[in-house]
Length: 188
Image 1 (cartoon, one colour):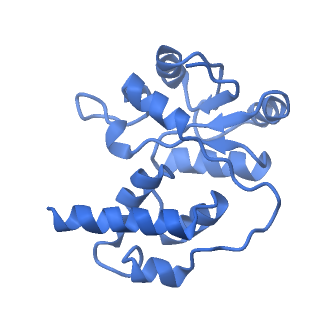
Image 2 (image 1 turned 120 degrees about the vertical axis):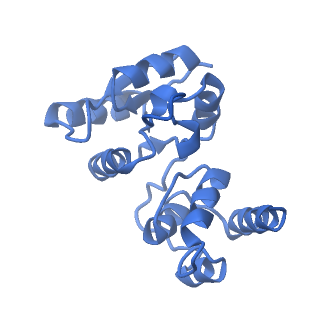
């Protein structure tokens, strides 16, 4: 699998895992304190070939993603579920621990935010409430699973609404994902 865009990862071990799974170039942020030089390299990469942000599913990874997204509009995003990034010994989490096939799947389900500025949300906060994704004792678990189903990553309620809008998840896609989530819960 060849990836045209340059993939932004957190560190050397992530680069090793990416190159093991696909043919791609990477830029390493070296942690969540992204330097001005790295941000300029990401901007240049976005202009030349495009960028896919592929960070760990934890707080520092989400922070890096947010910094890049604010500075470099139009970058693409790839997500891996937290359980697919846990080290074999259970100590540690990150892209570097993911299986090659999980990395390839994440990179084949890349999202591009709408670059035309403000877009109207199709899915409302009320929809999230009705779907028990906010304001319910199981909301956090349901959001986690919904993020896996839609390949948009783990979020809190406000972030979920933003990502559904940003990645232009349709009411139909949302409805199907919620139906799958409800079905899975009934089968437990």
